[in-house]
Image (tube, rainbow, N blue to C red; front, side, top):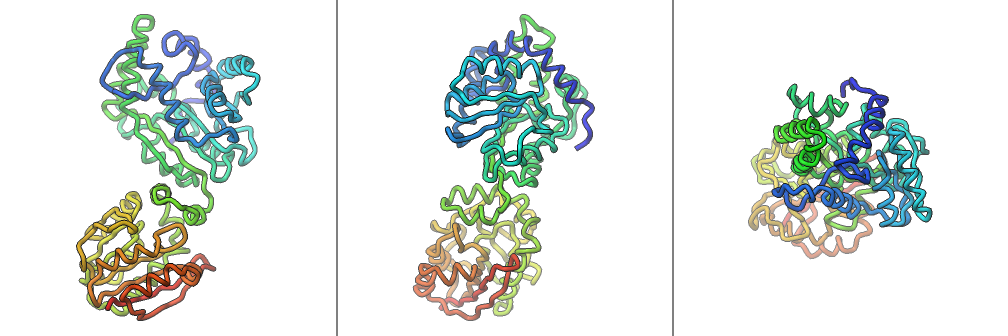
Length: 465
């Protein structure tokens, strides 16, 4: 991202000076963030503060914060949300903010709650005064757009968060790169920040750091409603500010400003993280989160598996127009390997829509379906495929062996099934052996190879009687 024209010193001075103004019409307690509305149509100003509290509650419900959590509230402002979180959960919470005025207010408020585990410090998000892995959670609301070196702040968040720690934050986003002079004047220059990440850019930036985004939510309509109501609230005392808020609404409507929420987990070892999953929905969420960096991370160490599997099929299936189903296609590595060998009639199925979206961009599949292999597969009718290939899908924390019975119905008599699995999974899984015995399949070949330097794999080719 380009260098910001604004500095932290300017931002600090802005919020030190503006605190009392915002309290006079926004929220007298000093909670300065936006609202989450059940209904986006009404225009009653009385609905604004309850909508702000509703957003707090939404974030808390999704946060996994408990009494044993240690939470960093990044951009804590006057401390209201930190105190509320500590009261609701019993967690330990540390708040930081750039504004000395707001930190002083937070410290003063905390004196009224001696039983709560609260600390407040003046600090920059780009240089957090904490050891690596200090926090189980990082919570932030309406803050990061003020951090002019935003990527540095994200790196710091990653550093101070524990492994498998949770981050959740909302922030302003810039959906388009084309910013009008009006939007620059009334949004970006007025609030002292440069156009920032789009919703998608944010997910990419977080993913590259190893902060895996499990949930994201575009809240731009709620931001627009917030500023509509704030414009009404400010009108009598601050007509110029009210007019600026109207201009902000126009910027939101034209896609020059937005608001998004992100929740995820710090994950260094993505494979262990994936293999430990027991729940289908969580598995889907994890693969959705991993999809953007999956190919990059696994390219050298893993790609031999889809290549070897595709070659095993090619040895016994010369027809390049054969109908082939890639079951558990992921980002389409197997499809790429098959296309490289000349196969053209490929269908993909996977649990993760985001993984399939990456596969779709490779343009090697004729059709792609999101489906659960353990349920009745709806991607096609019985006996639809000449061959089915499944690489790395039947393994720890993934599809159960019984799913092979569902796939068998899609395979023609005489068709081929390539099953590529970890050797340790194959050798020690009695359920897999029982399912393979029950199927009318004949083992034609089995090849062993290694991925990730040490992990042994079998690529097995079966023919259906």
